[in-house]
Image (tube, rainbow, N blue to C red):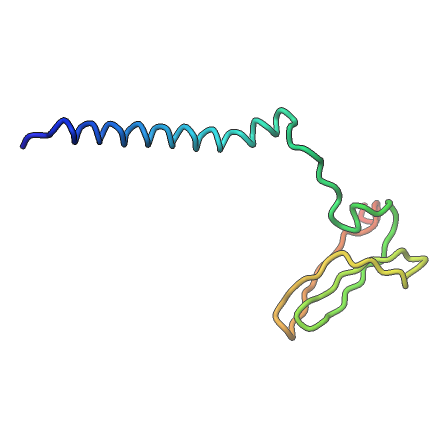
Length: 109
């Protein structure tokens, strides 16, 4: 069975296309890593929770069930009425989430 020169040219063009696509994919995969190393990431990420943006100190943690979500809030002990909502935890209606926070520093030595 003879192979025509037209068939070989088409096969050669596909090979070049696949090589070019592979090189482009490699550059796209490495570009974010190189940019992060070079410090070209733009603005920094700020705090995303009330705990991260609040000053250090003691806080009271509250949780309340609102049907299909639990609302977790914090407040300073001297002003427990000034709640700051930090997250909502979705769950199946009728169930509640459970959790724990770390003890005060030095309490477990």
